[in-house]
Image 1 (cartoon, rainbow, N blue to C red):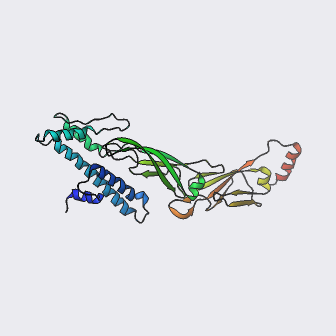
Image 2 (cartoon, rainbow, N blue to C red):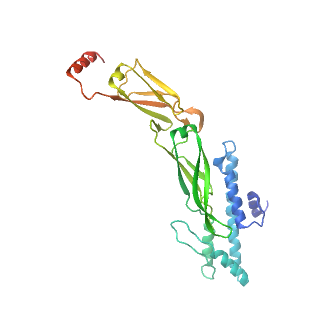
Image 3 (tube, helix red, strand yellow):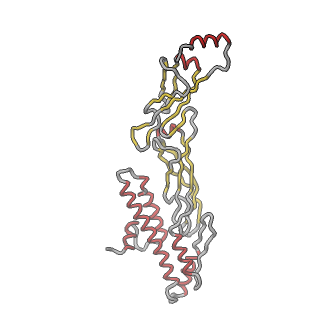
Length: 309
């Protein structure tokens, strides 16, 4: 078997003398390319395997950078003053800005040097909190699918170790059938911190209230008010589906009673994971009763309905 270190460089497709910045840049490029969410089911197993290997290689090479610093600092006391100064400068420039934690500076000395380096090593595997963004979609957009953009500002570490603000824009391909609560993750595209893995960006799908329909799972619910006389004697009404197509419903031989629900199969929301399959449209009726009747109307209704069961 080859040297594991050489394998890590081959996985990231970089030379053995690559700088920490070049290692980080290669990692960010590859995780974008091989993120499993960006691959169809047929190639997802391969993407997951490569994504895992890329992450493992990056973490291992990051640790090697740390171990190199340890060798300079704790090399048995034989290092030159120039080497000691170089290690001190490197470690003193490492600073944690993670929300909720104190700023931690690492320094070189005979007392406490190893614990500081140990903490530094652990921080390579940590990430700043993810950037969370909400993406509001209409029912029509969730039904047909669409493209939408999100914009945000993130912190980026420059080659000189400075943190600058950078504007980012990403295109989201909303798939037909997505529900509110669907999460899209952009791996490593959030804030950067020295000594940390880049944070993720999480986009949360939200649903805009629709004036006509309400979504319940994969079904669409339409609430309709119908006058009592029409509910008893027959009724017809029309409405438009989310596709814009006009649909009519007739009730000539049916009585619309309280709690009555008409189900139209296959006219609900598409299922995101099952092509060509849709939920149902459920029409719920609310009967409008008169607020008052004359004595003559009451007598007439009693006469008409006295034999009904």
